[in-house]
Image (cartoon, rainbow, N blue to C red):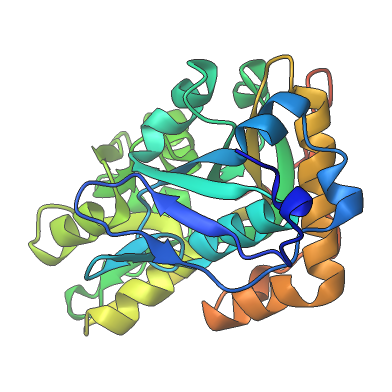
Length: 295
């Protein structure tokens, strides 16, 4: 496949959705940036496409409307690939499969709002793209309003499998001062976790504030309580012979989108501008992970 710049295109990048039942959706026009394109690894440039894992997190990150995949991560994925002069080949997957997919060389990068931890850095590299915090989502009518992790002792809490929310609660579940424990229930995506809450199977959901906010808009009677942890989250990059160049290219692309205003337009469109960052930062093998706020 010829490189887009060699054909003189002004940067119409096609997003190919490798998702059962999802028709290809065409993204906004976005120009390839020569100084970004030159940083793209030769093998990926020759292939002409960026293989992107898209965890099925639901709104506001990645969700389907009819046959179209939408959300902040979808829009950023499209813009990132276009800026590199590549087609974005996006595969919707369970969150827990994202990093293993990178390890298996199925993808070049993965979205997913990853908190950068020492454990995750054993298998992948990261570049910051947003910032956020977690909260509890509960049924207002139940009168249960947890503000801290200790408040859910003796309760059942739903989380998304493989998320930092699951890690945090698994770590704390046996530390209850009253002798009880937190029952952690893991689900493949946020929608399933919220369904468990609405149906009364769990007492609360711990999730990203963006997910919680959208679920509250969609489901009357749900409210969020507490502000848990928080800090930078990131796109994961496959650790292989292309890692160094891919990290440099991703940072250059993100920084360009930030400076051009396209990054903020994408966030505002998806009501996630509260998590905007001013510059992307690389966390490669050997880096110290960021320090996140204590809960």
